[in-house]
Amino acid sequence: MGSIKSLKCRECLKEYEPQFRYVCEECFGPLDVTYKELSISRHTFELREKTYWRYFELLPIANKSNIVSLNAGLTPLQNADRLGNRLGLKSLYIKNDSVNPTFSFKDRPAGVAVSRAKETRLKAVGCASTGNLAAATAAHAAKAGLPCYIFAPSDIEHVKIAQALSYGAEFVAVEGTYDDANRIASMIGDKKGIGIVNINMRPYYVEGSKTLAYEVAEQMDWQVPESLIIPVGSGAMLNAICKGFEELHSLGLIDSPKNMKVVAAQPRGCAPIVDAFKHNSDEVIPVERPETIAKSLAIGDPGDGIYVLKRLKQYNGLAEEASDQEIADGIMLLAQTEGIFTEPAGGVSVAVLRKLVEESKIEKDERIVCYVTGNGLKATEAIIGLLPKLNTIKPDAAEVSAIIRG
Ligand SMILES: *Cc1c(COP(=O)(O)O)cnc(C)c1O
Ligand SMILES: [Zn+2]
Image (cartoon, rainbow, N blue to C red; front, side):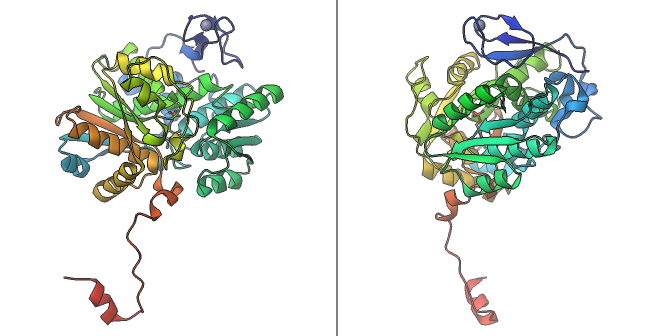
C-alpha cells in the first residue's frame, strides 16, 4: 500500500482528505500531496523496475494495482563532456527526458494523474495542453481504457496532434491561446466530472514531475547537483523538482539542497516569469499573445508563476530567456555535440545555459544538470528552414565524388 496522507494548502496549510479536490476552500490556494512517515534507504530502490514507479512510496497512489504504466522514466543522465567542452564547463550533465514513451517528460505527470483517476474511479480523463501533455495523457488513457478529452490551441505542432488522435483521444482544437484552452477545459472538467490531469487533478499531476529530481539524485550517487537549468511553461515542473530534492533530504537520502542554484529558462516570446524576476517583482504579468517556436512553453499566464519566483529566491536562482534564433542554435549545438535531438523547449535550456556561462553567472567547475524535456522529432517545423539545403544527385559515382571532399 502507498503512503499518501492528505492534500495540504500551499498557502494556509489547511489539510484535506485526499479526494477529488484541487483548491483550498478557505483561501483558494493550490493543494499539495503529503505522505505518511516513511523509512526508506538508498538501497530501497536499487533493484526495482527501471521506471519512475520505482519510487512508488513517494507517489500519490494508494494501491499498486491502480498503476497505469507505459514504463516511462529512469531516462539517461548523460555526461555531456563534448557540450561542456564547447561551453567551457567541467561537469555538465543532460537529463535526457526526450526518450520517454511519448517522447517528453509529460509521461511522468500524466502517468501519475491517470493512475490516480483510475484509483478514484473517474469515468474519463483529459487535459489542457501545449502539445506534449496531449500525447502523454492520451497514451496513458488508452492503456487505462479510459476516454480522453484534449483541449489545445489549434496551431500546435502536427505531430503532437497526430499522436493524440492515434491514441484515440477526442481532440478539441481551440482557436486561441493555451490560456483559452485551459479555461474551456476547466469549465468542462468540473461540469462533467472529467479528471483534467493538469487542472482538477493538479495535486497528483505535479507529483509525477518530482521524479525528475529523484532520478538525478540517484543517478549522481545521491549527490546534490550545484546548478539546475529547467525550462519553464506553467512552472509546475520547476516547483516539483525543488519539492523532490527537499523530500529526499527530509528522508535522509541526500544532503540539504539549500545551496543548489535553480535556473528558470523561458523563450523570449513568452517569458512572463523571467520578466518578473528581472524587475524584482513578485507579480507575474500575463503575456497575452505568446509568440515563440517553443510552443510547449507558450503559457502566457503560468499557473505556478509566483511559486517559481519563490523558488528562485529560495535557491540562489536565476531566470533568463532565449530568442528563437538562440533556441534553434541551442538545438543544433546539443545535437552536434551530444547526439541528442531535442524540441525547442530543450533548445531553450541549452541556450540559457550558454548565455549564463558567457555572462559568468555560472562558473566553469559547477556540477550542472540541464533538463532536456522533449524530443526533436515532435517539432521539426521549428528548425527545418534553418538547416542546410539538401543536395540531391543522380546515382552516379562522379557526382558523389564532387560533393564529398577529402
Ligand atoms: C510542458 C513542458 C515544459 C514545461 O513544463 P511546466 O510544468 O508547464 O513548466 C517543458 N518542456 C516540455 C518539453 C514540455 O512539454
Ligand atoms: Zn488555504
